[in-house]
Image (cartoon, rainbow, N blue to C red):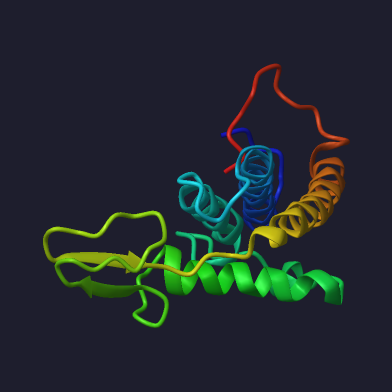
Length: 178
């Protein structure tokens, strides 16, 4: 490791911010893929793309080893999107990372019954697992949320890079932050 007289605390803070920006960028790009390709709540790509967005977005706000989550100040947004941030974190905690029975239901479908339009009557006993989905019209707002947070993270990272490394003689090759 290169010794640049930068405190461990500053290095860890920059690390957490860099990882968070990477995660939010992943959530942003996955949201854009969702918006380009998913046109219906019944689209088979809806659930996996929603889950990928939720996982990537929520990662910086959850317990990360060994350095923990982002500081709580990063969870503050304009009122219009703060509730959306909370919804994504809640969706991660109850549906994507876990399977809470409040949101994941299993129904038994007796022989000769079909309760799904367009699905033929079943010949055997079957079951259906239902799940909660984020409303389709929320995804453009998720894109805005990711851009807002990503922009703030980017500004903070640029300021820290300049503060910590701007006046230092750096090696002529990449080096590990930690």
